[in-house]
Structures are given as C-alpha cells and as structure tokens.
Image (cartoon, rainbow, N blue to C red):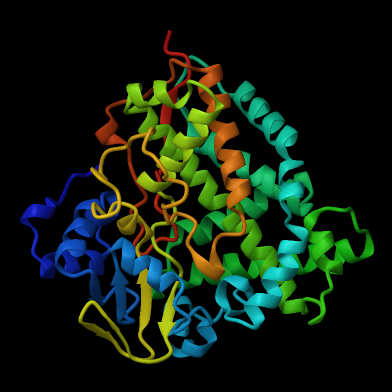
Length: 419
C-alpha cells in the first residue's frame, strides 16, 4: 500500500491536482489527499482524466446535505453531453434505472424493485449464503497461499446475487467476467472500447435471460420484476434490463471488494479482530465500522447541478457535475473522532456512516450487503482463526485503475492455516 502523500504537507492546490490526476499513488492511498481537501478545499473543482469539470465534496455535513439535495440531479440524461464524454454511448441502455433517475420516475422504479427485493426475501437467503461460504472455503487449500479475493470474496456475493435474481449456475462465470471488465477498466476515452464490448454482451445476455423468465417464471427476483406492476404501470423493457444490470453489477462488486477490505484490515489489526468476533453483536458492530473505515464505494455516482448552488463559499454552476466522496466524509474528524483509526467498538456508527448513501437513493441492497459481510467474516475467521497475509501489509496492491468504480484490493494473498 503506497504511502505517497502526507496531508499536513500538502496544499489545497496539490491535493486538488492529485485527486484530479487519479494517479497510481492517489489510487493506492487517497486518504491523505482527502484529508487535505476537507481542511482546505471541501468543495473542490477538479479536472479529471475524463475531461469533464467536476466538483468534489469531502466533508461529512456537506456530503449529507448533497446526498439529499433535489437540486443535484441523478438523471444523467439531463447532462447528456457530459455523460457521453465520460461513458460513451454503450452505457445509456444500461443506465435507465433508479440509480440514474429523479422523482417521479425514481419513486416508481424504487417502489417496484422494493416490492420484490424485500427484507423477507433477503433473510430467506441466509442458509444459502452460509452454504455458499462453506463450500467456497472447503475448496481453498489451507496451507498454501491463495488469492482470497478471487477464490472467496468475489464468488460469494456473485453466487448470492445470481441466486437472488435467478441466473443459472452455468452462466454465472461469464456474467462475472463481463462485470469485472466494467469494474476494473475504469471510465473515459482510453477504456471506452473494452467497456462497449462488455456492456453490449451484458445487455444482450440480460435481454435473453428476461425473455426466458417470461416463458418460464421461476419465482426468483428477476421473474418477480418481469411481472411487477404498480399503479404507475410496469417496468418498460429498457428499465427492466437496466434494473437487472444494476442489481447484478452493484449487487456483487461492491460487496466483494468490501469483504476484501474487511479481511485485510482485520488481519492487520489482531486486537480489533479479537474484539470483532466476541459475539454476534460485536461482529455486526465491527462490520459497520469497516463500512465507515474503508468503504468499497469511494464516491457517489455522478450528480449534476440543475441550478447554481452555493456551498461553503464555492459556487457550483448550473450543469456542473458533482461527486460526493463517501470515503472522505466517513473519515471527517468533525464527525468521527480519530477517524483514521479503525475502532470496532466505535459507538453509533451504523446510524452515521455514509457507505450506503443517504436519502432517496440510499442503497436498496444494504440489508443484503450486511448479511453477506457478517456471514463471510464469521465463517472465514471461524474456520481459519490463524489466517495470515502473505508478505507485508504495505505490499498488498490496491486497485489503481484511473477513475475506478470501486475502492478495493487488486489481490488478497493469504494462507488460511499457516501452521
């Protein structure tokens, strides 16, 4: 893990340049840069590699306000020129969903998905999640180095979300490969071709899968969405494909990287690990602190200003893109004392951290992510309490793709049973 920056020595101009560049050093360890921005430029204009001027919000109070501000629109069709420059044309068909919409459309889509993606349906997955976790660990060699990210952290939430949606088991690996291209390639002109191919393949696959669910409903979530109705009408074909896409992609990538982040930080802090697994309540609290400390969703998805907005003496002009740094907000010392220390006994974290966002766009998959995290960690450390990193903690590699979708490890080499 590269320690390339020292926030107390960094000017606001240097911090803004570092965040704008999305350099490998910044991607490996963004926290000092965010610390400098919180102190000196909490609403910071950036010129990222995608070439679209952006404003980055880094303080906790500002982040909370911005996440719920209706003047910051999630409907990227309203900023279509900027959208094209960042994502190209291929993403449009996959972004017609509740994540990229405002009321009343967002309200309708959220209601339809919420009526099928219920807490009861999520809780019913608990035995299946446990079974998947057990089976994955049984396949891992105990005394030889293993890349836990590849062998456990990714397969677990992938199989769970595919089970929830009703994706056939023999089709899951291909869906994972296409999703990985989107997650790890980043966005912008240099990555556009790879994105177009992966997103086109995913779109075609989902169209075909939905057609099969119409012919042969199976009671899974995707079948329920196919037949979902509400007073405003059913999902359109585009909305259905796009909703399936966001549930599949966001439903396993964010959790996979989050499990990896959790394992890494717990292995680096034996006393925190001990405290985290005293009982089920301690584990649930530890999971929330890990969400705060190193969330896998570093920044919110883009918003754009529908009018001029004044925030902390900075004018965000109408039409400008805005990103909210969940990572920076979750380490704001004005909200979380000693924020760069992971403390699994930190009080009231679940009610305050912003890892799942806030307001109308609060992550609909939060209950599933919590369930998977708790089962993944208790199963992994319960079976292998002496698990250890291979190599030094500072040598573990983080994703360094410019402008990535997630904050997470590139690999997680461990030995499950060093004895």
